[in-house]
Amino acid sequence: QASQGCSDLLLWLDCDREGEAIGFEVMEVCMRANPRMRVRRAKFSALSPSDIFGALNRLVPPDKQQADAVMARSELDLRLGAAFTRMQTLTLQNEYEGLDGVISYGPCQFPTMWFVVQRALRISAFKAEDFWSLELEHSKVDEAGVTTSSRFNWARNRFFDRLSCLIIYEMCVERKIATVASVNAHEKRRWRPVPLATVELQKGASIHLRLSSDQTMEIA
Image 1 (cartoon, helix red, strand yellow):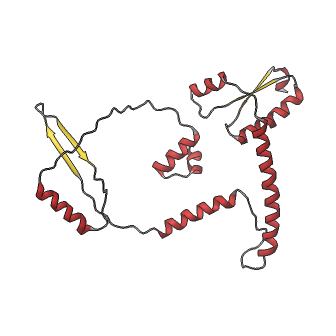
Image 2 (spheres, rainbow, N blue to C red; image 1 turned 90 degrees about the vertical axis):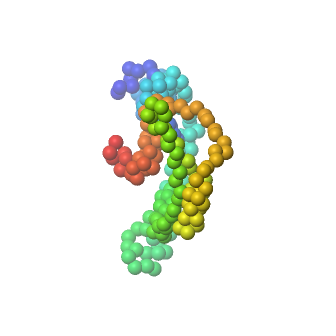
Image 3 (cartoon, one colour; image 1 turned 180 degrees about the vertical axis):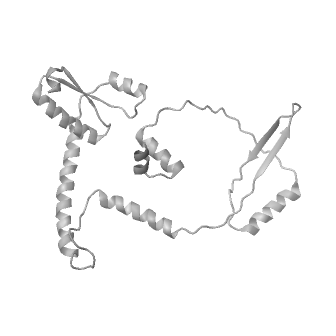
């Protein structure tokens, strides 16, 4: 009903194939009521003013090929899932204890489950090991009483053998004087943070806070 008095239809959906397919479903419904509307697509990846206005200034026609690709994949998933679910159910249901009911198969879920299982196996097989490393820091106080410190990174990073690390440490202590072989200087700029896109938010929460994607989106 709302589309009857409109001249333009702007599709603001996710910038991926699924968003393109949903856009064509919306377009089909609206065009039934008003087939004379001009339809265009806005592509954006974040809800920042620059992205929103940029998408509004660069409207494009909907991509039928991407929408068709989604529909083809959906059709294949349905056919493969139905066929393999039936085969698994009939083959395995009476072979193993506890396999009651339908044994479902998903073309997308099964590969994803492989990654989840592999990561779980790596976590369960992981054994923590003690390691040792060397830290070197030089501090200097200037005439104004300001202390300037320089920390040096060890290229080897760490040793898993305490005796080897201790020998190198004693060699450094005995020599007492270190020689600076080279000095590299470069300019580093810190840019103003930009609003997070959903994917970047999930990645940051996973890396720094150890939160899953579901937990992150639930909190957001």
